Image (cartoon, rainbow, N blue to C red):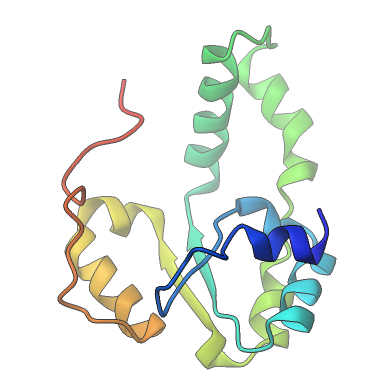
Length: 140
């Protein structure tokens, strides 16, 4: 995708804050470098998760998608090198005001406090409440 194509994704957005979500961005140093080359004031949000929980969740997702998989431990051993994220590079190369770190478990267990901190980091109204905030998604 070219930069122009990417920018077209946001052309109808009139909000003060807009963003993109992808766990793969933290996986490649060149992605973070590209973000800051094109958007030097960008803010990065790292939502960390217990690595075993994350691996198992990925495994279940693959199984639900109909993929034939080996037992979990064998699958996890194959996947582990691919999940070697470069968080250290993000945390050392960027200014502290540009990076917010929090935990998935906190987002689930204390959503309002999590969002309040996130909104403060982004500089938006901490009183904002989405109509869908209390809806559960991707629950089986």
